[in-house]
Amino acid sequence: MAPKIQLNIKHHDKTRAEYFIRALKEDFELLPIDWRSWKESRRIVDAARLTNMDKSLTITLLFLEDYSDAEVIAKANAVPTIDAARWSNNGSLMFLVESTDANKVNNALSIFAGNE
Image 1 (cartoon, rainbow, N blue to C red):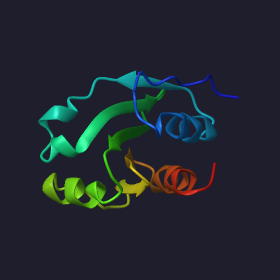
Image 2: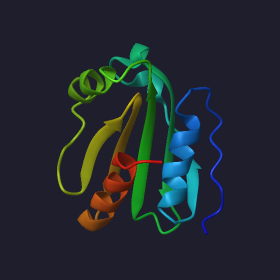
Image 3: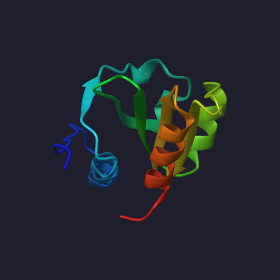
Image 4: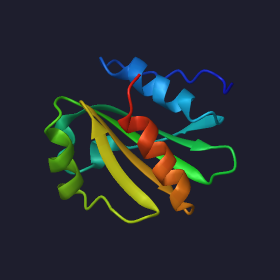
């Protein structure tokens, strides 16, 4: 089992995000993220960015005020939707998954879209 990820975030979806990350069964490290520089950042409560140890998978988590904010943020920031980088959201948690391996992207997205 991968080590427990603990995010220093105050948001009602924090525990759910940590569960999703652990479900990937990989070790992750936190990376810096300047989410306040994102367009429409007033809709973001907090954020986290993680990468696995071999740097082949990066996940950006945006903790939002509301479910509907994800689409606005994605459009305003030209968040990509290609095989190697895709975004989605689950409630007020938005996630951008990036990898050179499309299978890793699909696997991570399926876990984030699933049930706790």
